[in-house]
Image (cartoon, rainbow, N blue to C red; front, side, top):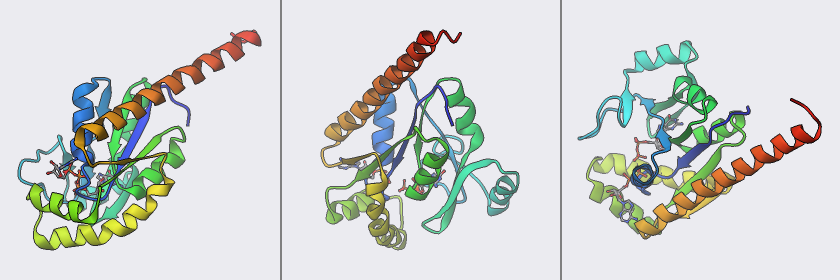
Length: 206
Ligand SMILES: Nc1nc2c(ncn2[C@@H]2O[C@H](COP(=O)(O)OP(=O)(O)O)[C@@H](O)[C@H]2O)c(=O)[nH]1
Ligand SMILES: Nc1ncnc2c1ncn2[C@@H]1O[C@H](COP(=O)(O)OP(=O)(O)O)[C@@H](O)[C@H]1O
């Protein structure tokens, strides 16, 4: 699918720091718009409906699946998560730069549809640090943390399918890397559009 906006997709094992990095990027770059996903997971402490996620009952989620409202959806850590078509299609068609925070299955599915999407995988510096970030965040029970750590190994094996991998050790360094990727993509995209326009001019196509 060809579209005038850029689509960035960030995936990571739980606790690697993707929400913090995406939030920091958006504070530095007002052109980036988040896409709010839908989930059947219950909200954590400070999370608000419509801000971090649209929190749905399983029946409401089923309804959206039946109406074909999702661009992609997946089972992750025992819950369902989905990106609505509405959250992306219209916005990138109007030239917005949209960022998605979704799991690797969703990222790969999005790339099949939006072939120019830029896939970025965030890795923690070590297993110990991943565990301690999940514990320090203090939002999940010990059982939920164990499930997320168990799933992290297979998630990390998918990093090679992504366009870029960022190791989130020093936070400021990782934000800089993310910003650089976004900037490079915009330059590449602008150059491609210019090259296309030149071809049209050379062929005298209006
Ligand atoms: N496929 C897919 N995955 C999603 C979506 N929204 C969130 N996720 C992923 O679901 C996983 C769990 O998210 P969450 O419960 O917020 O925990 P977190 O990983 O600790 O931030 C993460 O890998 C998210 O990136 C979505 O719309 N589609
Ligand atoms: N580079 C970093 N160094 C230390 N702690 C970090 C770093 N990046 C994120 N964190 C912390 O780790 C925890 C998990 O980060 P979060 O953004 O919620 O991860 P994710 O969205 O990938 O699950 C949070 O408490 C966050 O403040």
